[in-house]
Length: 202
Length: 135
Image (cartoon, rainbow over all chains, first blue to last red; front, side, top):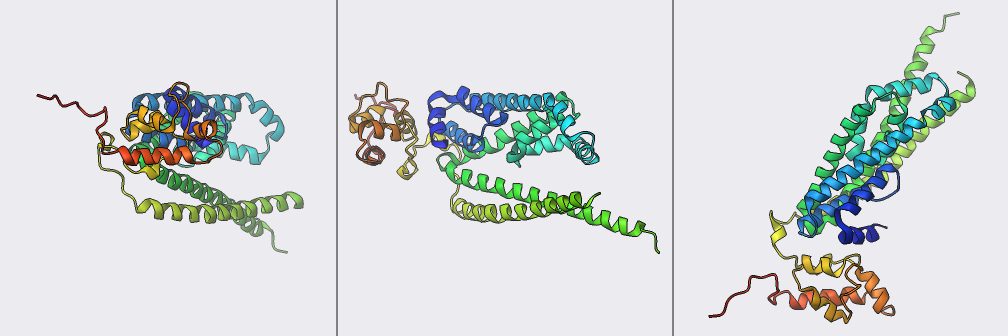
């Protein structure tokens, strides 16, 4: 898949690149970060124009994220019916809303595997589209400058950077999953401790 | 909280921790290996876009002939002549597609021919150089 897309980006340039980032942001499993690094290298080699790539890429990614937000927004009634007003769901929603900006920003370039679910959750939560769009646009800009810039700097050696970035992204995802597990465990232990203290002595 | 919910939550937390640790081990090893390869290389000097790429080992079979000719500063016709194929209709095909279309019985031949042509012609003046007027 990556090889086919790389050939087509060489052939059709920035518009196709923007379309791929759009589809990836909507949720299609496409290697967007690898293609972004490669696009940076193609512009360094003088084969494609870096400005068009950056503009089309950024627009495609932001539009795709907006579609993801929209899907979450229109699915919120179903989610609400499914999970009802359970305390766990309310807690999760409140926790997300409190840190939504940071979550949206970081998932654009640091924990990219969680970007699509974050768009859906953001749409289904109470955060306003304008707020989402600000953090999303900044996050996607950071992603394009950072990854595309690495490709530009390393030029024909971009595959080395790409391998490192892909693996590092997976490592960060693992740390986030482990962190969530440890956080939930700590909360559980605290709740058990409190429950023990509240039991009246016989 | 009933007993089954409690058990489900405990399993969920344990699952998160185990999956997190597994992902860390797998991707940690991959990151370390990628870092070792990456660490031995330095980025090309600034403004390297003006210089000519010379390392033919970086050629991949997803590349097209116009892309290779731009990157390695070779006239595209030279590559088409070497492969004995017409430029028309082949500009957007990858080396793999060209191989499948013209040399299906010899896998990797187009890639090897392109590499050999570049190595043989890199020192030859190309149309990208400024022409020198003869007195």
